[in-house]
Image (cartoon, rainbow, N blue to C red; front, side, top):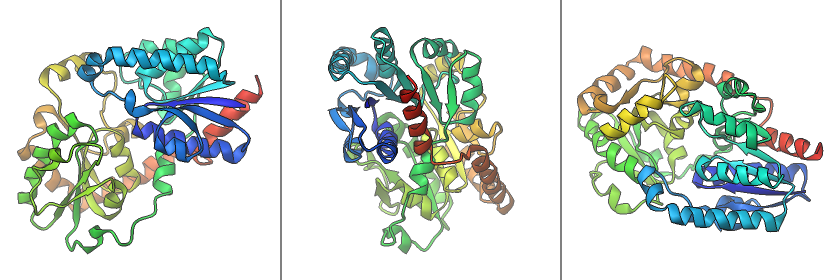
Length: 366
């Protein structure tokens, strides 16, 4: 069997790599080719194009690079035809991958989708495209299955791949964080330039109001170091060590995204924050179809972590929310809620292993 796997950004590359390892564990003779990154290559996938060439984030960045994106789409389609895979496995990266799904459908190549587009959040009728072009969807959040059922899409919950990442994490016992003698408040401002520049300055202002705690910033080495120059000398920054930081943290302030769920799986109480331009927010607000912005609350189907967004994202409101969360009862209530969240997300095996099993069973049945 030959599978063509496509991941278009760092997180997708990591999850696709874990999936590849699980596929090889079940069937070592399987041939895996595709587009991705370093993690996929290390896992044994023959990667012909690195995701960095096509990973554009944000509406404006995508718009200004459309010609590049479409050029790589053409290249990818040609490679799919040349490789003649038995199956295509798409991992996240909806804008690019759904175009490949349509192309594959036209050429009668079955498509399976792991970490599917977040159509449940907005543009829900796009799920009809999933029904038309995708043979099987592997959901990473429990509520997604019910959403896709409404559109008659074949969907299976396999668990969230963050389980694999968090459970396989081994803390660095020599990490500099061990020497910090105050409880740590982790600041996770995001992994994208626009998130960092928007969120970090306000986060940093909180430190002066909580002298009994040590604030530490989670940095991303792929971003320019100049973006972190505003951090005061008394606030440490650790690059590409977010899990080590969460492992040692007392609590966290986290920009909305995947990191909110990672923080919950580490059982670190958190405030979830987000702010974008007023115009962007008003546009998004017209289309959003979910009651929460954090994955934690969406999965729990109730607010277990405070969400502080837009005009509320200012020092006074953050200070008040952080003070409240640090109170013993509120702190413990959130940790208890994390246990219920984990029970809701639990599956019988690792998500990667379950997904690999379904993919290979489906391929053999054709």
